[in-house]
Image 1 (tube, helix red, strand yellow):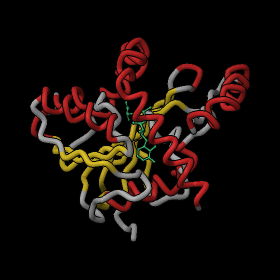
Image 2: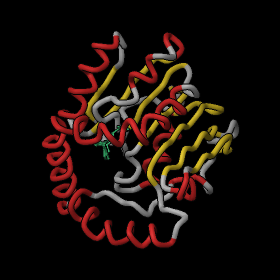
Image 3: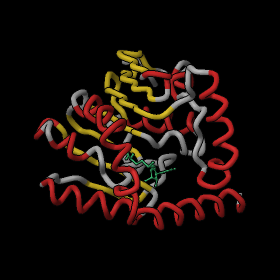
Length: 215
Ligand SMILES: C[S@@+](CC[C@H](N)C(=O)[O-])C[C@H]1O[C@@H](n2cnc3c(N)ncnc32)[C@H](O)[C@@H]1O
């Protein structure tokens, strides 16, 4: 347990350190690749929305365009990342409740959200299944689960490169390139509404609904 806590603390400190330069470092990727998935997600979000692992709040400008249709709560385990998200929310005039918390223990009531959003973070949440189960706990039956992430590629050469990259990225940052949350959702209480997987299969977007009869 101590080892896990130490690793967790190191990873949070790592994100705290990277927070100041995160937006600048990812701006090229943001414009070229990530923004389209954020827009895809924002246009499907509605009502009481919880975002898991908000980061610096790069989904906020997209969610803000939905106007009053989205009321936002969110978590991230890095207070420095969350500070940036709070400034972004303020600048956008969004009244978001953003709190420091782990994706594995969301500080929200069961079935309290109409929508749960998580983008580009399940690649590094320690236990993907536990993270998804927790998202479904806070989602009301019939509510929308909206995910976007980089996943294992459909191209063999790229898959080999992803595996090689993980040899460094997993021990250093806890970042995985060969995951695919969709496969984990298969045995959870959701119905798939839409799945879109980009060219070479590296980016996948998922829109699922929590089953009405889920416990
Ligand atoms: C690559 S960034 C993505 C941020 C944001 N979701 C986005 O789409 O820009 C990953 C974020 O996940 C957060 N994170 C990673 N593991 C987490 C966990 N177990 N609980 C809460 N936040 C976590 C990190 O602090 C970081 O802000």
